[in-house]
Image (cartoon, rainbow, N blue to C red; front, side, top):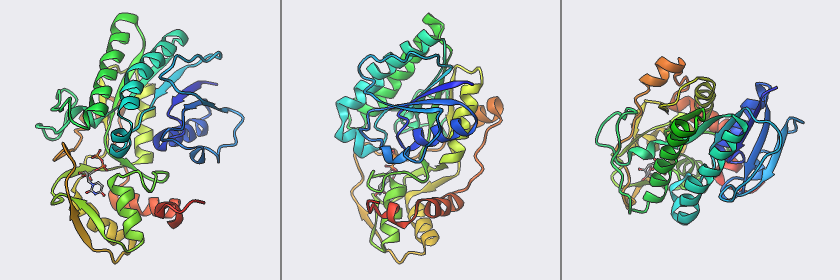
Length: 315
Ligand code: UDP
């Protein structure tokens, strides 16, 4: 039986990854400090093959048993979280990645870094291919996340080149699905919370900025395929169907049967104007592409989450 370690395993993506690895027959060690993750996301897991370790990986940490694969997802990932936790975000991207790479080296494990489309910043190349170097403001409020992930990528490549660690880098584009926190500030959970309560939907700016939204099960499939490949270069994983934020708000109203009206609020500093992955590399290397469209994924999110979770009512 293979053993996988998932940092950030109690988070939105991490907990879905733990579920899927267990379903495939892995033993899973889930590491999380519960800063933005929650035990609620993993409390349904009853398997003997699952262990939760409450630990802050910005300090050195050690696992005694053998490990075959490391999935390094730990980080605040929503803009309101990394704006609230700027130093923790920088530390987990730097020290946390350093410790986790050291652990992978010690165990001779395959290491996968969860990087982000934010390494492209406010991109001047569209759609974004992996060989685009990006357009990031290092001293803006989003810089703590973008630069932490860019540093984590540099560290990962250095461990690969100098230390021979078997590494992979996935650049994750906007992803949504059940277990996103109702108040995590991102567009989809916010619009769903507002739409289901027939409250005003807050579109920032004029809503012409674009994003491309991937359903969580598609994303997890891509992460595992990349980990199981021998690839070392960064690979975009995301859904290339691009929407303006105004279109997203209208689709949420339609799918949730809402009577909400759309209002406009100030656009946050350095908010990227457009974002869409070029997924040619993932298609060719991994034979991966997303299967679930936005309307279907939103309907599935509503059905699986239930209204109370989406409205942020504690269970
Ligand atoms: N956004 C919005 N209303 C909200 C929350 C977000 O219009 O209530 C916009 C935000 O300004 C950005 C887009 O939605 O243009 C996606 O934001 P999100 O926080 O989901 O992720 P990002 O891609 O910016 O990291």
